[in-house]
Length: 269
Image 1: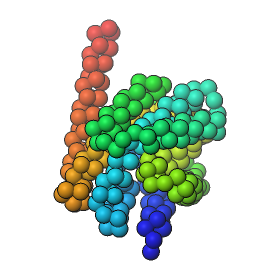
Image 2: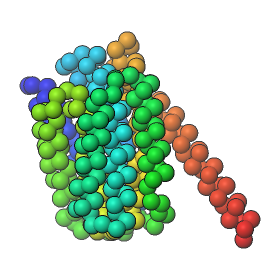
Image 3: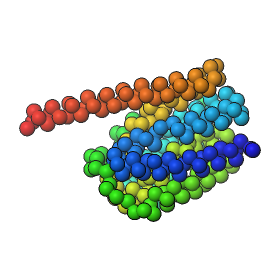
Image 4: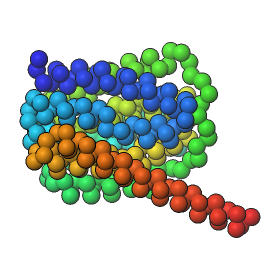
């Protein structure tokens, strides 16, 4: 089977299942937890496995770099959608955010494929998104969802995969690598949540996603560095270790900030 067809079938299979999982997590644990979950390198790791087998470790390492730099475009999408969602309906927000994503992707395609440069760009972009996104406290997980919604979300994710993958195939390998599968998850969850619950949960979800992207960036950077000299297994295991380490650091920082806020609140009270 052709590698492009294999990857397409893989994406179409994974995306709807992952959307269903994230939707259930949002129902049980809230939108911030769903945002964190979207940043898991499940789909990316599986695709890198196939690319390593079919095209070799060098090609797969380049794909990991593309996914790393694609974080910048995802941050651009989040900023544009979040700022627009304060006053505009979701279809307009989606159009503007998609435009920001596409423009950023074309711009990033001109950036040299250097791990240090790409990682720095990703970290700066995610930090900028966290600073620019409107803030909103977690108001609790939604208690219910119509039975039809999760299947429709899954179908929407599958259709988005087809659209993005088909478009990427006409743009070449570099742009195809930059078109990470994460926007499929983000777009699907954002439009359904925004249309049913308003903008406040969107800010929570996108904020959680950005926090998770620090860990995703660490995973991609480590895999890009180690894949060719040490092989896929070592690269992925080290990448997952880096993912968990950065996750722990981010959670620790957030916990420390929460304690400081509580102390200030108690002091002012």
